[in-house]
Amino acid sequence: MTSGATASSTAIGPRHRTFGFVSESRSPAAPRVATFLLCESLSAIGTFGTMIAIWAYGAYRYHATPGQISLYGIAFTLPGFILSPISGVVVDRLGQRPTLMAAKALGVGASLALLSAHSFGALTLLSALHGVGSAFARPAFASLPPRMVDDEHLARTNALMGMTEQLSIVLGPVFAGVAIGLFGFKGAFVFDAATYALGIVVLPIVHLTPVARDPEVHAQHPLREAVAGWRVVATNPLVRRVILAGFTLHVLYGSSMLAEPLYVRDVLHQSPSVFASLQTAFGILLIAAGAVAARQGDRMAKFGWIVTGVIGSGISAFIYLGTRSVVVAFVGVTVWGFFTGVIGGPSATLLQRSTRASLHGRVMAADMLASNGAMFLGLALGGVFVGAFGVRAWVVVLATAVVAMGVALGLSDRADRRTAPAAHPVQPSVDQPQDAPPVPR
Image (cartoon, rainbow, N blue to C red; front, side):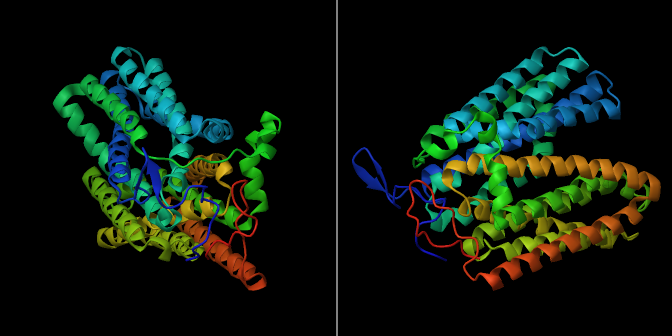
């Protein structure tokens, strides 16, 4: 681990000065940071639960068809695809905290507005509003760690923040079911709004170090500024490979979302309860792997672990969706959950350490755009090829392509390191000396 300044470093050192006193508050174990992470986990669970509640409300209140319910999901995810160039600029110009506050305030309003929604169209519109909030909240949240903790704690913090999303995937449906059961749909919407409000309340407790403005970027035309993150992707090989790895995995996830229920029904010939159990097994190992990444910290903040996750995901997805055995399917989906969980923290850490702090919002928004686009692509490809050739044949092709991409990314990274041992030096920031050390590989 290189001990000098990195791209995520700022002008403030490891100790933070507050009201004339110096306090150790720059690690994920610090009370302020730990409280923030806990409350953000609850907020993320509420956000995911909101979507489940909307889908259930549409199905039971308006007898929505599967196609109509899918529109809720599209309305939620499409804003992240469309608005990512804008959202990254907003994060970098206004800062993470104001952006998160505005996004969560929109979530509070959209959740409370569900109380008076009386049509399918209104539910779709409010799903889109939640999606708009998420489009700005995700890059803001993902770019917080370099300003919130010291670099020596960055990898662990990114893994812990990744666990907030992982917990929402696993516990969001549980939260929605319990809230609906106890309070009904409208009570659940109020509870969802409360989790958004909790996220707003805890934001001021975290000390964020300042990031110097980048005059060169901010002087550009707004349209050129909007694509600044993608210029970084195009010119930085490590950033490009990290985002391409995430893109590959999300194509796999998108296709699997469509293929899994059909696979359980038509290949395993099992009930929906078995499908739910498989998803639970995936989620448990997903969280466990995130905890391992948080425990290991910088030891796993290397591109080699991302390559391992991509290759392992392809192989385990093939084992899971390519068998007729329920037992083997459980083994495959469990291993897949683990490989998925180890990728998020290292990916975020490498993206942050390889780019200037003044561009983190745009870089994270570019990563979000790639992931959302890959999900749509995976769903589209799955719809075509699963219908034409069946689940198992499509999984063989897709898993092979994912493994091949993982191998290609690993070989490319190895070739880069052989030709330049100190490959991918940190791009110097305006508040960082030009002789900053390279990103540890």
